[in-house]
Amino acid sequence: MSIAISRLIEAQFLAHAKTCYPHECCGFITGTQEETTLSKACYYLPCHNSLVEKRRRFLIDPQQYQDAEDKADEQGLRIISIVHSHPDHSHDPSDFDRSHAWPGLSYIIISILEGQVSSYRSWQLRQDHSQFDGEDILIESQL
Image (cartoon, rainbow, N blue to C red):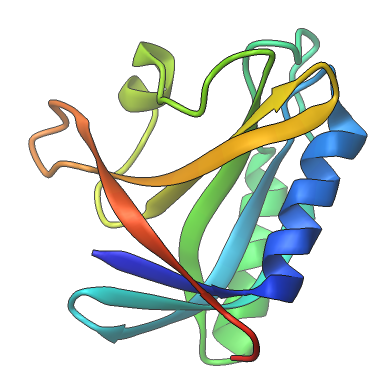
């Protein structure tokens, strides 16, 4: 599986992660499923991290989730990715990430070290929930 994103969407979620540091950021990418192996991003929708302790976890309010789904539906799109950051940790998914993820979505995790983007990676949860597999991120200049 691969996810195709524009430079603009990449810049938006990386800026959001830097702005939220030292807390975890979170947001959605909406887009289309172009074929069984490619999701194509259209918009990044930043969300508010609803947890009190934001340094190691994130929670998207159910109303924000519903609003994002409604906005995507209105445009003939769907949520294709959940984005979040790992302040001062790697971009690898945690056990907590795995236990709260759903198969069929891309999970872009951004490593922020001392307030600067270190790296990011996209992941897909296996259908049996046993682990994440890395997926390719295709950067397109314009979608």
